[in-house]
Image 1 (cartoon, rainbow, N blue to C red):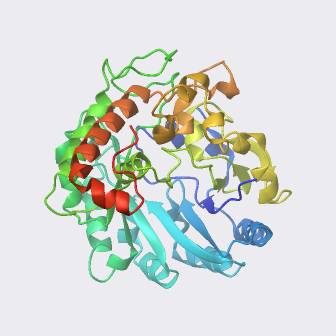
Image 2 (image 1 turned 135 degrees about the horizontal axis):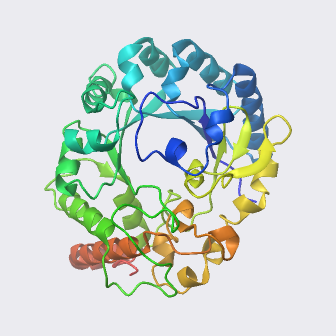
Image 3 (image 1 turned 90 degrees about the vertical axis):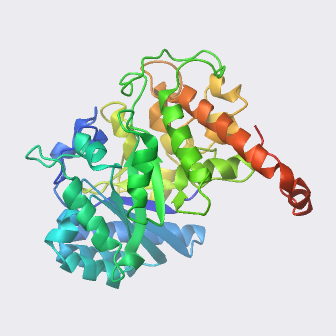
Length: 401
């Protein structure tokens, strides 16, 4: 059994934005409607106890707790401080991080004091240029949120608060220019950027894509608009004369191409070690699964009656810890399987079939194939002159694809 090392807590189940692509509010699973607005302290306390038990069972000295929502900062500074205190005092050393749209940092400055005191790394969602961002990330009034988000990011990146700034998260949008989007993010000097493919499935396909579930590995031909978008961003990042920032997706794929092991559930075959606790104490799988169907992330477990050992033994989690053997037949036969890992689990869903509908390639299969092959070629060319050094260090001189 693979122990959990990452605990994602949904500390607030509502949001102060109305993003039109939100998997939580616009997706198939609408369970947020029946959940409390914020995670109460007794629920936090019980969760902290369960985390401590799990860490002790598996000899874990350190765990990661990710605060999420909705919009997690809607809990307010006082409640945030109290819940962080409960989690920090429960047992193992805890590394805290938080993903936010940033707006509450402007409205409630006391939040920054709490984040500093509790050493919470803060990531902000920002979708490139003003036009890119305001196309989808809207205030409830219908106005764009870029101006306020940008102000929050500048505050977070200021010398006073820079130590909190973990990076920017950007959702890929085919209507955006990839290079312009990347360079707009660079203006905020983020320590890291992560590009995310929009959450989609074979039943609810992403914008600009109409595909049938493949019966064989991709041939490298045919349209791959998301792959081409990412290639343009990758080339701009890779060709920079100096390192401007880290880009998680590209770095993870490069590590895998060079024979290493990635730490992301979006690519690679590393067993999943993340579990979600909803605001009411329900234990669930990755919340991205909410895009698939109502109840897709459910386990029937909660922190009041169950420990995390029971969650780790749940068939839904075990299915995502089997490496290559956990993929469907098309992915098993693909030479890129070790690198792409079948793509994000939620993106594999198609109604019917084996594996609860997840034994299919990702709906972004063609895009991942295009991106990975392009990156492999660039890495191979870049490493050609260092082959002797690489062999001496015991590292493959060429990408594995």
